[in-house]
Amino acid sequence: MTEIKSNTDISPCLSAIMPVYNEAATVAEVIRVVLAQQLVQQLVIVDDASTDHTWEQLQPLAQNEPRIKLVRHEFNQGKGAALRTGIAHATAPIVIIQDADLEYDPTEYYRLLAPILANKADVVFGSRFLGGSSAHRVLYFWHSVGNNVLTAFSNMATDLNLTDMETCYKTFRREIVQKIKIEENRFGFEPEITAKVAKLNVRIYEVGISYNGRTYAEGKKIGWRDGFRALWCIFKYNFFASK
Image (cartoon, rainbow, N blue to C red; front, top):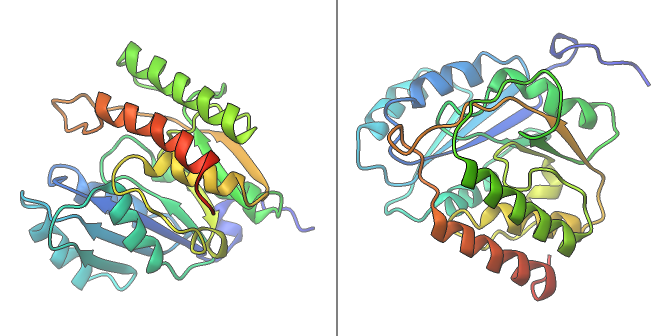
């Protein structure tokens, strides 16, 4: 097998799926950084009925960039629903989830794709908690506790040994993610997709990533109710739902 040493060794092969809701402060910068990555063949942006100026910012950006596929929901449905819409529009061989804020760094795409490009993995999770040189903003203690608890319960149900089930950065071979029926409309997407991927018996890898977490004042949206929903989703999709 030919060794792939950097992202300059390969052609664009990635569809980035970006759900957007009221991210006028950051969305243009995130789009700029995503499109600067040589790996990106397509950027699918799903505006989930934003009520700020996000939609007005997105339209001229899409008109001037053929790699952007822009879709808008008529009413707000949630992150999972936006991802369901976006994944259906993906055309590149590999698909990654990208939030519209600045918490996750698109310059790390190659790190996430490397196990797939080397034909070692079919799905790759980016972990905020693996060791290494990745930088992490220090924020909420109880969020980290909740994340660890949810990941532990998910691992017990799936028999995986992930360190960060709730991570945004999940990367898939397109044929795998497009055959999964996504049912959750909000943040329950994370435990749902993890459970359904685990049932496929595909090769799953995890790589360390950096993380620049936001405060609620800066626009963070997930809350404690989403944590309880995630627990229910772990139970539901591991023990009662089909793929």
